[in-house]
Image (cartoon, rainbow over all chains, first blue to last red; front, top):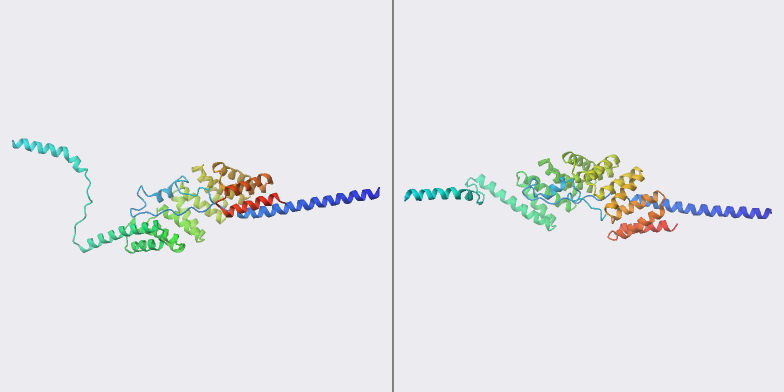
Length: 85
Length: 270
């Protein structure tokens, strides 16, 4: 009876150790993954430069760069649209 | 007989004069033999011609040739708006050659000549970020927003600079206002999500990344970010699914594609 209870205790201890090892490995992998993924989360890229302007200057109604700079709408403002990095 | 001819001539002149008045001809050229006037006309012609050459060079990506033309225009002392415009175009040519310090000086010159020049401010911020001068980028962005409070470019640029400087409150404010003005702009949701991640507000970040993906389902970077937040919240299957989809959507971005695969595999193989 004593032998049997010792065996059960040893088996239980081995099981606990195995469970702890598996949990530790999961935790280590998650920690590594979380750190790696958090490091690569970067904001979107800067917008490209606005284009050149001819000799009539920025005040003409055809001056697209100045219109883009003032636009309330992201697409008209020539901002990145997010489908690429 | 003569009075009748006279009446006909008067009637014709009365009918035809409005049409004649609307006939456009060449602008009258001031006729003068004064050396000063002739010199000014020659300089103005040279400025216009060099603008055409410089713009053609920019179109052809011949940055050095473009820089030479706009530099020469500035040396000729052009009046406004040609002075600020030449400085602005010179800044573009220099920025494209990665001469960021020179480009910043040219855009600053354009703004000094024309303090309301929004396009020059937008480009100066981009150049400042490229040369790592976040303080100046932020100062210019503040002026840009003050002049054009609803400008998407101004809010986007200032938000990014604030985020890079660690000012999460300012970044949140600018991206939120950008979204108020243009709720369909997925990238602003993404950047707001990044701001929330850095602030540790993962639930808010989750909402923003989901909003970005609702607007742009193939937005690989937002999908990757969503996976990261899900992983942080312990939802491993959903995170794995996000990295899987991000890898598929990032086929044109090898770095992100590889990273998403690595993350997916790390989750599935403990």
